[in-house]
Length: 468
Figure 1 (cartoon, one colour):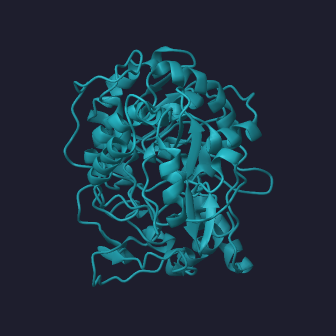
Figure 2 (figure 1 turned 30 degrees about the vertical axis):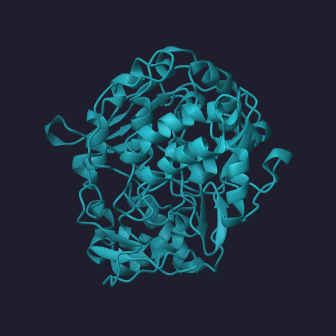
């Protein structure tokens, strides 16, 4: 049974750990920039990784949720993986949910980071891997209606603690649910979730307001979910590098799904310093199959010549990563997501909100491009591009081989070990798990740099990428 996420916002977990005072710009003719180095912000690196992981799986950073007894009754029908130890309150609760005590004393449960950032490849659950099998193609409006109906039928609003503990989560779920239905399998509407929740919060104290603070597009833009082990290399958040400043504060954006106001979030900021410390320790999983060492060795200099300028270098002596954002007119991948963020009202809202005006400060600065990601663990993170439009690494390097529409089986064991990515049917006979790159925002074009390689060189680079 695929898990149905209610906490997608933690797609925002990308961060930085160094400081560069000025952005470096590589220009092209006519004065247009080709790439920019996104500078880092000073970070507090004194956090405790062990405490941070414990807070991720047991903390109350969402503030409210569904009654624990309801979650416990539903838990046996959910995935039973046990990738880490749980405390007593969370015994029997799925790894992607957390039970905690609400401020009024009620026991509640809600999603945690691993709702979105624990994924499967070759049948194995990998903590920190984006879940490419998430399901947002079904509307969550009915789910919200049933939750509210169930609360009314089961609990007495005057006598029981649960209705009050559910109230904040229920309000924001109701506002969020109509905005996040996607058109592509496995895509994650994290940015839309943030917009929908923040749109009904007072920017100064995060309290609920019925009147929308800005407008949202009717059209939903979703993305692939990036892996968390890139956090320690990244200077900014999001695919277009919009998130700047305090990483613990940016990570805490998930709280808008259920906290009553900023007083609860202020308490969590210190704990998210520990969460950030844990993220800095996370490592990519090693490629589990045999690697052709000679072919990989031939691919290394090709990668360093053609790819490392944007994606970084990888060696036993240490990795480098330039934190470059590539102009939309250069990368040429589907630009709708970047264009959408630049015009969204959430930018102005955020920059005058509690997140941006209280210490430690964070802010939004949109760019006209996409950040070239680190590539360690890339073998596990199919599909590719920010919108998940390309099923394999080989096709990232060969644009002519990319399918217009392609259907996965929906099984994580159905993996293409040669081309690095998902096996698929290029002539879909069903709609289930079918990706359609003709849909606005999900185009497969762009990143044509690999087309310059010969077929022999291309396979050598693919083999080298298995070593990262």
